[in-house]
Every structure is written in structure tokens, then in C-alpha cells.
Image (cartoon, rainbow, N blue to C red; front, side, top):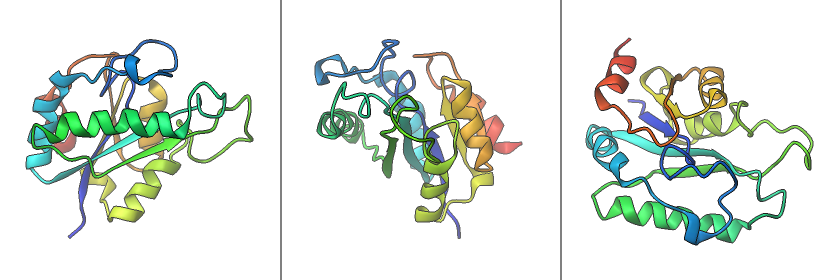
Amino acid sequence: MKNKAIFLDRDGVLNHEINDYICRVEDFEVLEYQIPPLKKFYDEGYLLIVITNQGGIALNRYTEQGLAEMHQILFNTYQKQGVTFKDAYHCPHHPTVNDPCLCRKPGSGMILDAIAKYDIDPTLSVMIGDKTRDVEAANGAGVKGILIEPDEQIDYDKVKEVLAN
């Protein structure tokens, strides 16, 4: 049987949106009110997978190590509430520095990689993001996209409704 997943953008969905690159660990603020709805999905057998553009790496605003530290804070915060992220994918490229890549959203490369790696059925999965590029990336991978406002709490019932249709 194939797996099902909740793909999640990071900035503005899992942590506070500051409308700039989060370059310092001190500025990384986990939105803990997202834990209860995501715990419900986790308990229902959904894989939770982070899909995030991190072009600040290419711009030398922060490092892979700094990003890893932020993700560890995120994972530890959720782990304390009994929730484990399956994986976190990030695109370190930026269009002003790198040639076009397949991973940077609105491209679907990161989602497609996760689908292949974890044997995920895209029709049973959703991507939650706060930008239209998150929805475009999802749709390009055959996954339903849900657009929320930056820092808006994930509505469990709304997500279930999208998954049912």
C-alpha cells in the first residue's frame, strides 16, 4: 500500500514569516499552534514532509549548517508533542545566482523526489503553503495544493475536505 503525505512549506506555515530570509537561528520562531492539527494527520498515518525554497544559501545569507540547526529546532519542538517529520527537502538555489533548477518552487522537483523516495500516492496527499508557488509545485506533482495566509493556523477540517474531494 502506498503512503499518504502532508507536504508543508516552511516559512509562514511552520515558522513565523518575517518577509525576509531567516538568517539567524535566533530569528527562527516555530508556530506551535500548528502542532495539534498536524498531530492529527500524523496519528492518521500521514507522512509530514517539509518542502522549502532556501535561496538565501545561494546568496550567502546563511549556511547549510544554519539551516540544519533551524530544522532541528523545528523537529525537536514537534517531537516533544509526539510528532515526527519524515523528511525536509530544501532548494538552496536562487535564480539570480544559479541556472534554473527543477527543485525550486514553483517547480515540483522536491515533491516528486519525496513521492519516489517514500512511495507516496499523490492523490491521497496535499501540500500546504502560503504562496501560490507552493500550490503550483503541488499541482505539478499531482498533489492538491492548499493556500493559507502567512502564519494562519492550519484548518484540519478544511484539509480533510480537500483530501476527500
